[in-house]
Image (cartoon, rainbow, N blue to C red; front, side, top):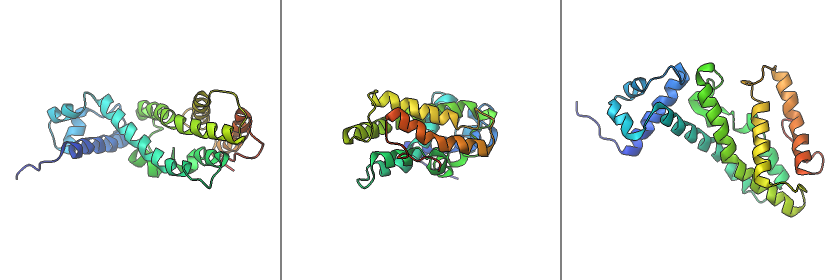
Amino acid sequence: MPRVSKSPEERRNELVDAAEALFSEKGYFLTAVSDIVRRVGVSQGAFYYYFKSKAEIADALVQRIVERVFALFAEGVDRPDLTPTEKLSRLFELDRHGFNHEEGMGALYHHLHSEENTFLHQKLISRIIERFAPMVAQLIDQGKEEGAFRTGQNALYLAEFLLTGYQFWTDSAFFERSEEERLRRLASIGGFVEALLVANPNTIRIGT
């Protein structure tokens, strides 16, 4: 049977798809490059044409996931009918609307918190913070211009701090808490954000 010729982009995506499926099934550490190429039906030479290592294909997978999740939020930030506080409330509804949402995470959604995928989980969190911080900083600056926020802090640094705190404090992989305890903390975050931004009380609602 003749071999099907595919474009470089299509073949690269096939390899990333296979890595995503295998990391979900076996975990990152137990998946070998040989498993990935076997799943796709190509040679190891073909793999190394696109990626230098397993870590590099993991990086490509994480970046793809981050872009999926980012797309779920980016449209709302440009909406002229929402205030900066309303946009921040939407952005920080992470568990309910995106960062840990199956629509964004794909096949890895139910497997990111396993020990086998610690490497991917940590990389994903750092990339999410890096990708979203400029967007949050833009909202902070907009809020300052409109008088909704009165903080004198650097908007980008403050955005990174807020996202880092949110991601780690509400992540069940780092803290063994019941769902009730996690939701109580989630509901308190709006007040913390308001305090850091020097915003009016009860204007940023998260997890309520």
